[in-house]
Length: 509
Ligand code: FAD
Ligand code: DLZ
Ligand code: SF4
Image: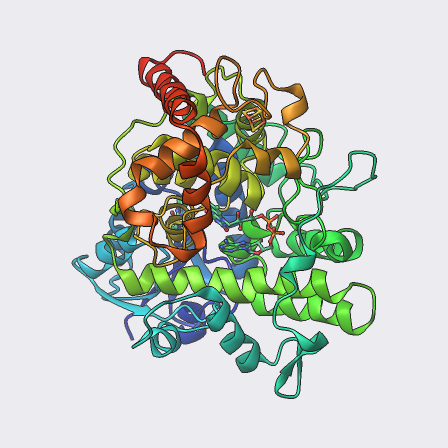
């Protein structure tokens, strides 16, 4: 019998992957390939490439140890055709195989490449997610608005997570109003565990250093987990040390603490080293055993069972053009400060520096610092999308695009967010310690030295008045703007124009 090929991509490193479940260990050949097409479709952070290659190499070794035949291509092998389809064709020719089993990739780009490959490719559902496409569509069809909260409740009912019979555990579906505390910098926090590079990781680090020397981001020190066992240790560590405070300080930001009480597991979940349902069950157990409070556990489970599944549903439902939407017609180029050029805005300087160093920033840094600024300044959402897809180690389009294009930039016209996530400097000042060390004054609303967020916030609202003034959740903002006297409004808009002019000229802001 002719063998089949079984494709395993760099973010499909799960033993229960549907393509592997469907395959026959005795006759089929697993194909894994490090290829330039995947490593360069955006200029990925070096840590992201290194994580991906190291985790792929270790997963291939694990499959071999479990009795699979694996054809693994390293990036610098001579006959590497440097694309996924190219490598499948090469292996198919060598093996005399005529069929490929694949699990549906997480990006339209690759789904389409596999669909058009001159091979018989069966793309199976990715069963690592809790909601299938059909389930998401059944929930979404016919609804006027697709708010995450209602989808999340369906997922709670479906899985039974945090349910007391038909009711939510603790009497409420959502405990978010308890989760808005700023953090104090005198608390001792452990941060995520750091894994010393082993031989496999070291070899990959040398390769990435050599082949991607100019990509934005620091390769070393490299401390990510790169196999399921280590990722499990990272989860254990989070559950023991950070989960109890996760809810309280979820929105907080501190200069000297890049991780606070966040799990730092998205990179492992998205590559398949951790299973989302298993992670949720582990968190639920902490609540049941009384070691973590309901506001923390519910908040954490909502991120995975709710947001993570929901954004994936939106990405696949909306189709391949979703990442290029631009509902607000924003056209400005992404300023150099996102790539590390000097800025006097301390919040942005910190968020970008941490991104450069760690290939990680937590949600509020992504949403309310870098995302907020890009939205207020009217940056082209396609450029913003490319940036987020490049710089974070957890970034794949299915999860990154809805968060960036939809939630953060409102470029989908309000499918994900009921109103744009914009704020003045006041929010950042309340939730962080960034403003104390800033060249700008967060309390200053106009004139030299005024926080650029304060100026651009009103500029944004004024510019998009026709679209947003009828939104009941924004009415108060427009009333406040209208109550300002005309001279003050003019000073704010002039200040905003000056900031934007400096951005456009490439001057330091
Ligand atoms: P925690 O705060 O500890 O949360 C636990 C887990 O919940 C995360 O690991 C993640 O799997 C899940 N989660 C939380 N929020 C979201 C969300 N909004 N969407 C999907 N899953 C969520 N997340 C990615 O995994 N990849 C991305 O490319 C990505 N891009 C983003 C871009 C923007 C503009 C924004 C605002 C958010 C983005 N997120 C992305 C969501 C979120 O910021 C990250 O999942 C989170 O910061 C990862 O860190 P953590 O593991 O410490 O998360
Ligand atoms: C992110 C990434 C990188 C950098 N390199 C590879 C690779 O060489 N081979 C591979 O199979 N996968 C890689 N990946 C992950 C893919 O880009 C990912 O599978 C698709 O974007 C679909 O989500
Ligand atoms: Fe950011 Fe404004 Fe605060 Fe400076 S003053 S850190 S620019 S919010």
